[in-house]
Amino acid sequence: MIHCKAAVTDGNGQFSIKEISVADPTGDEILVKIMAAGICHTDWDAQFWGKPLILGHEGAGIVVKTAEKVTALAIGDKVMLNWAIPCYQCFQCQLGNQHLCEPNSAVTAGNKRSGGHATYENTTCEGKPIERAFSLGTMAEYTLVREAACVKIHVEMPYPSAAIVGCGVMTGYGSVVHAAQVKTGSSVVVLGTGGVGLNVIQAARIAGAQKIIAIDVNPGRLEIAATYGATHFLLADKNDTGLLLMAQKVRELTQGRGADYAFECTAIPALGAAPLSMIRHGGMAVQVSGIEQEITIDMNLFEWDKVYINPLYGKTKPQIDFPILQDLYASGALKLDEMITSTYPLEKLGEAFHDMHAGKNAKGVIEFVD
Image 1 (cartoon, rainbow, N blue to C red):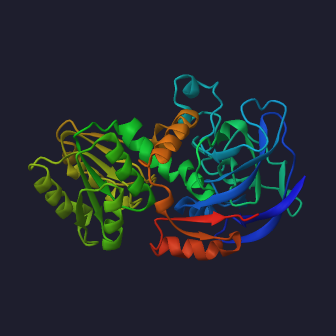
Image 2 (cartoon, rainbow, N blue to C red):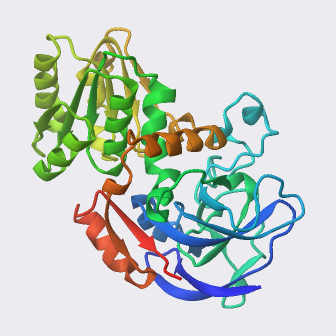
Image 3 (cartoon, one colour):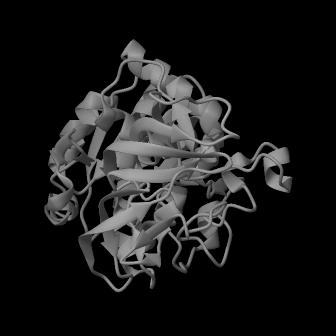
């Protein structure tokens, strides 16, 4: 049993730093000493999910204990974590859709907010079992996870850079490469150039897109987008309903017909239909940011032969894709170090959330120091 600090929410909009107790691993579990945890809007939202949780779903660290059924990892291995933890046995896993694993309640309707494949008696707070967000709970000094939640780090990379791969980087990259299958020489529009949008931009560059049009209301973020591969920049107006004026400018940049692909990365429900207005006939719109609210779409926007997809986690297979991303990072093609604007100790999580909402950071990271 290990006693350590963690960021714990009451589920009603508040969090505090508390002591938790983490049991030794059993079965296929691994005890990981967390070295860095990414900060995401989902972590903020988790405070309002109506139940106590250990926050955090992006992380990297060191394996410190393993149980008897662990086969691919050993004590001392450096690992990055993923939140869509596959069982490899269910209907969806057998089809190759590991990101849609049916027993994983992180992606199953009715319990989308914690994560499956785990009991919670192995982690307690104030004497009571407590869940870990998405079965990870990375905003803690230690966490207990299944082996399937870990991918070994095989290249030299700082822990903060490794930590952010597990959600925003993988979602952006996978949405481009796996979900949309962006083609070399194509034109791409990216709505919103925050952390996820920047990863869509650099994935489009890696995929060989010729024209990458970045759209944002923040001119500073558009400047950052240039360093990740954007070729054209449109400053949006918050009063531009549905970004229809931006759609006209996109057509002007694409021979009057619209882009081949458009990716929505703002998480603003009112912009859920916006990518449809920016693509050509037969083009593809991709909803990346995870809008879950009810929205209204003018069916004229689908004319003609347009496709709108809503992929989860970029259709990721972590055990295959995370090593690829590591290699892209090692080659210099995937920018991760540059994306981390600020790091914080766990005790300054409140400040980190404030900076995130203020748009100060491309990506903020909680860093645990030995």
